[in-house]
Length: 478
Ligand SMILES: Nc1ncnc2c1ncn2[C@@H]1O[C@H](COP(=O)(O)OP(=O)(O)OP(=O)(O)O)[C@@H](O)[C@H]1O
Image 1 (cartoon, rainbow, N blue to C red):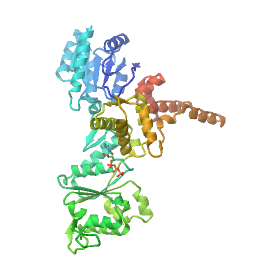
Image 2: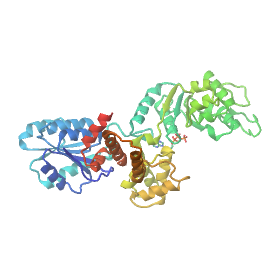
Image 3: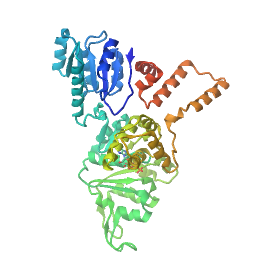
Image 4: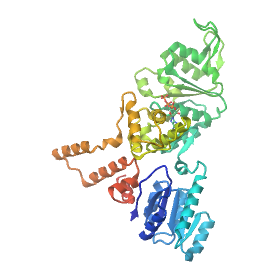
């Protein structure tokens, strides 16, 4: 059986206590009351391992003698999952040989002798917290996740989909073939284009970006190709175009589908022949840069509708990177929210350092149709318009409601509205639709997990079962 407890403040590190005797767990918890950490306790090694596989664990205090596995072995596993964790063994002198070997190999970092002195215990745990705080990233929880979250050329992310994308970007670093980036507005396409540039051999050369939607056809043509003085009415001076300015670097063409058909034809020729002619001249110039283009609308549909040239589409689309919308990058929402909160609090001279629980629930449950840009703007706005240390749910609701059109995307956490749910349930009953028991259970569990923004242990606590029960059930449905 596992014991799960205490309100979770995701800004604090997690301290995991493991001992097969419940009495010892309670004494440890009592001795550590008020410590700046979320304490989770387990009386079963297997449950503790299952928990640690899925959740970051920064400090672990484990008993040495346990029936399923000894403490040193358990801490060795924890080190594999969470290499930066602080691992403390609780042991009697008889186990000295084993514990000292684990200490010398770096599996165990600190040792508490049984029976312990509470003052010494607090001292050792405080030392572990200090050690965490002095790690790169100041011991921030996010920086302790294995390999994630990362800041990849300014793209902050932890979600697997983003980590896979970063790997693909690294793989594409050696090519000069055109790259095409898809993704809803505000998902970070320009950041990805810059990251491609910075990873590639073009790094050190110019990165030139242009949003094709911002210009009329004529202006766009002169932007791209450049012109000579007098090339057209208003061309009062000679101007270098973007094809030329990009040199050996990268030319990023955002919202490429908005290019007019005649310009699409000209762009195709530039890509095929690797040369262009500025307006009002006959001098052909070489084009060296890598082209990265992007679209926030379905380019395939534009091709089908005959609005975008199919041959150009295939030319541009040699390597494609798709950015998922923020709502599909579960773990990234809160991570980014905290990142922007810290950034704008610093920039605006404010003291916000976290969100309260209800605010987290709303932020995690909202659909963010404007993706990361919208999240960034909402947080920036809240920081400017409010004071305090924590962002509250009222601030979030007000900020979302003040946006054009108000809260125009469903807040998932609110979808489990009990009134609606009850109405739907009775509707089903009236229709005589009976769900199998496992499905009812699955719905209840999924609803609880969604309610807790994906935090399984917390959902388990609400459902009054152990986290491992939920993990087992989730596994069986998969
Ligand atoms: N993962 C991220 N980490 C940090 N900041 C991000 C991230 N993704 C996006 N942003 C920020 O969100 C804003 C929008 O990003 P960006 O302009 O790259 O999006 P986009 O997809 O190109 O948008 P559009 O389709 O409207 O051109 C920028 O301020 C960017 O810095």
